[in-house]
Image 1 (cartoon, one colour):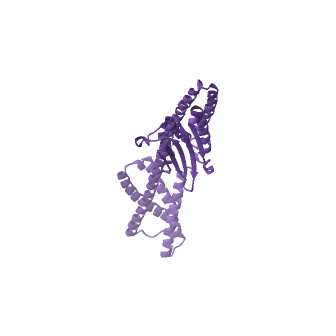
Image 2 (tube, rainbow, N blue to C red):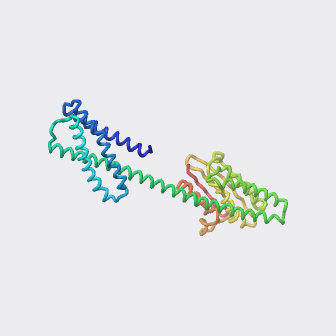
Image 3 (tube, rainbow, N blue to C red):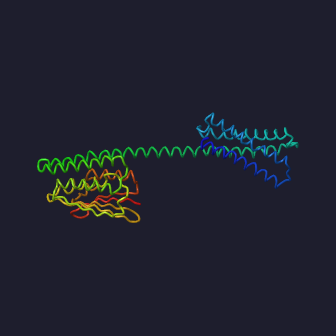
Length: 342
């Protein structure tokens, strides 16, 4: 039996039991009752369950739940009246057949009972239809969330797939500059590149990695670039130990470091420096990448591949719980700031 069927039968049995018991108690406090009166009310339980279950069968058979609401309303009203007449006829007929009641049924009492029963069957229909509407709403919402998640996953994979070719292109340019100048150092650079690629291939499978893993990749990349730029490039790290195990998107810091070197440090004949720092407090984790360079006002939000990629991935993964800023820190340095709220 499915979960939905269990809920249905639980509601059927408990609902009709409650209705029967409440009527029996009301009758007990109003009149003196005997065993025949109790048996008369006990007939209500199986008859009520049988009629509403037959009504449910017709609803499902003729697909009433999927009909227009303007068709559902008259169907519910008509069948509630029919069900009340059927319920009254069956309960009275069974009671008379087994000699449980022998008194004459009055017209006024009959009409009053039928009206009350009609409201009971209408209430049953409202609850049943309402449960179906709620289930459909939940199902639609789940499907919508799945679709949104799948869309985000596709976008994230597309963004991650852009990282490796872009990173490879810049790294190979670095090594190419060394091949003629210093072949032995070029060999070291190729070894470092292979280590980096091995790491990125593993990272590419994950949506998140630890900051410690990301920093390992960044250090290898900076060492590789240092071979190319020599004394023109210096770097330092100031990492809060409590942030090492936080989860971040793969290659997020690396692309910003790459962006800072390409669009900042490389444009200065004397070179420059790059500093990576992290800080954690009760509300958020802040990551700063500060590099030598200067942004123009017109391109402060558009400079470099890493900027757009970082912005898009943070939005997809964290929504409003993360933010990214790129701005001039002073007349000599640019700061990239990532804030991820706890």
